Amino acid sequence: MKEQAKTFREKLAITGDSWQWYARLFAKGMVTAVRLADKPLVGPFLKKVLLFDQPEKNYTQAFTLNINLKVDEKEAHQNVVLPIDLIRRSIETSPFRAIMHKCLCRTGNNCQNFNIDYGCIFIGEAAKSTVENGIAREATVQEALSHMEKAVDTGLVGMSTWIEIEKYVWGIKEEGLRKFLEICFCCPCCCLILKNMKKIPPDIRQRFKGVGWKSTYLGGCNGCGICEESCPAQAITVQDDTPSISDQCLGCGICAFRCSQKALETKPIAAPKENLQAYYEGFRPDV
Image (cartoon, rainbow, N blue to C red; front, side, top):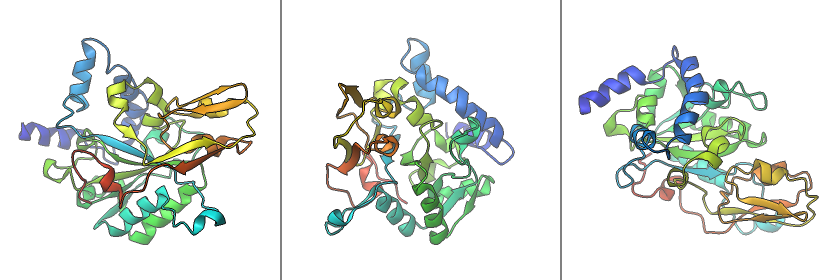
């Protein structure tokens, strides 16, 4: 089995040469696979391939991080820990950082709304494989922080992900898999997760969570429905010019960012944990 896994990594890992092919696959093939994962017959096979079939062993998880949140003067004295602070801490304390040359999802979808050059940041010793494969470059702490800051005011959503099937995608050795974490800068129009959240089977969807933030209604809604339309988690319904937000809210902040009336804001509803690694359940990434 270990030899087979090694072969898969060597044959399937994305390289500079196979980048465009994989980008198209992610934009089309992976979307189809995830949407069919709850279907009879084909569903169990796809879950096995995607490493979602054994919850006690497969720990794929992702956490949304609203990197566009601002703290006003009234809140500043409360020492509010923003989601972007969690990313910053992980970048600063990690022994290794790499910046992906381009965003795989935006490349595959030929994104017209956001810059494809805002690629993911990989942290942890195992992330060295992305540099060796020619799809990322090693970065200093300051370079990685600068890369993150460029994405802050564009409406992109931060996402901390540990996705097990990506050991084949990025060519990560089995023994190094826990020494790896991915910080993505996602757009709702192209991101494999955000774009398809409404169609992902519930048992897979529950692996994608927030970090203790939720959007709330402030007043002043004009009933345009943009927040309901843009919410990836189907957590918002608008009725009689009033949005209602359910507990399914990921705290991604897309609704507040896109609301022209500034009728929504995203606020913490739970105390922050010490770092991104602490949010993962069943294991803790060693990055």
